Picture 1 (cartoon, rainbow, N blue to C red):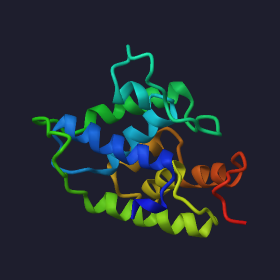
Picture 2 (cartoon, one colour):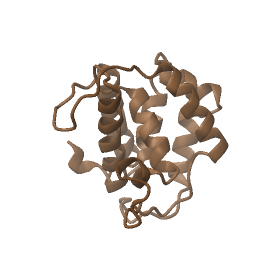
Picture 3 (cartoon, rainbow, N blue to C red):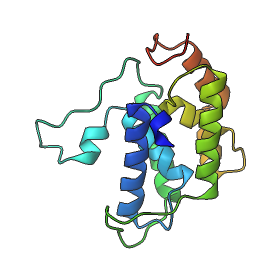
Picture 4 (tube, rainbow, N blue to C red):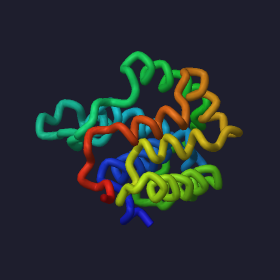
Amino acid sequence: MFEQYSDRAKHVIFLTRLKAGRRGAPSLDTVHLIEALILEDQGKFAEEMWDSSDASATSPSRATAPFFAPETASAILMRLQQILPRGEAIPDSVDMPTSSDLRSAFDAAMTLKTELHYQKVEPLHLLAAVLSEHSTQTSAVLGDFGISREGAIETLRHSVPNPEILP
């Protein structure tokens, strides 16, 4: 399934698993995805993956500016910390189940990728997909900050030309 995801989106999925496991969450959920998406959006992928003192660690490059303003990203992350489940850490080598909300978001991101004529799912497809689930606590937090599905889609439509967009 993830072969249809861009490298950036794959990094977000990987970071989702990593962060959820470190918190001992019972399953991967949209709250973990949004946390990972914000961290990746703000260029903090490498910091989360490796010791920040490792000078060779670099974040994946991106052709677009961050979607979230730094202040908004920080405020959302603080709010998410309040709802993120905590438990005993789960080793990285152990598979974790995916919540039905997150599976629905993955499906919605694939649909949106097709509708917008992208070859690959990008992180903003994932964000828009989570926001399409109005009943989730995660979408409510994002809505409190004025983050909308329509805004994410509009940014996708007007982003820097992406070589992975279908003609």
